[in-house]
Image 1: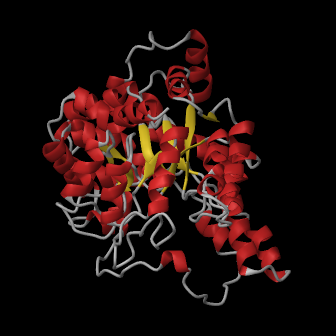
Image 2: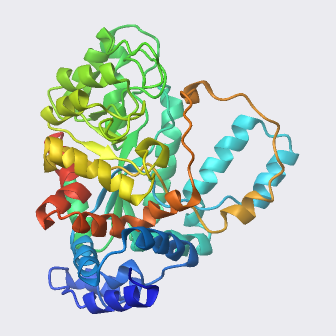
Length: 445
């Protein structure tokens, strides 16, 4: 295994990667912004203790040779890296402000909303949080995140809040991170050494008035115009589109669900069955005339979990032109629950369904180092009932700190190193870490 000193030396050795393909303006911005001497060096130029600890954990598991590390980091730095589903780095809350809201008698719903707004926007105005936000992006080497911009559900007002927050942050920080509207925007982000969000909503917006099918689905187009490019068909529970993965019955796609997918195909919104039941997922993939994805899931052939997808469902998704994004949730990965388990799922999908079948949709975010300190300032709230949407089947899997650290969002460069270790070609790796998502979003426009 490489020591931290050897890892740093290796980075220095690879950092001579040429910037000739990058525009002069981007090269200047890179030098000013990153204070580094190459794209590879940017992956570690401002590695804080939290980022480094996660990286050390993953390295201790992977134990890459210097040649594997060199090749993996160089490939990662050169490639468009696209998180198939996740979250940009999160700020800490303002503990004093949140505590004041508690003392003023704010409801549980108000406090949840305020907490979410702080974590999604506070790095815009707080310079310390903003620096850590930037550092996490750079350490990840991620070009674009298919970012969760909708709270789980169908109510348009519920779905619009996160969309507003991400629009706010990208409007005010567009020199560093912006909202992409089309695939070429992501190519531009890579060329200019910037980052971007492609936005996904965690539900199909429905008014629940049921005047007519066309009336009920009119907000699909509205949310597309606001920037949403992918939508969950269901979350854990049953809705009017189909059954979620938490339903024992798994009754499949409804008649209305077929109409919803047809409208998404027409408008250019990608149907996402990551949280749908297996039958619902299968029927959605067969009903769609455009690619369907399971943006953040796992392979039941490796570890059977209700959030995984069995082989017949994955085949239907792949046959539609889509992919399965492997997530970074240990209890869904099973086995060792760490970075090797993540790579096991990727390997399985490539071997069974080909290199076009798989992406990585982390479903995790980087959390500010100040989160613990700020959260400690907030008075504890009375225990509340579990939300209906979160009624998941229980399992006995025990998650450890090491598991989570090894597949931390800022460890994206080491996912690539791990794929190098597994013997995959550069072409295949490029598809897995971004190329397949780029293909699907292009075909879905």
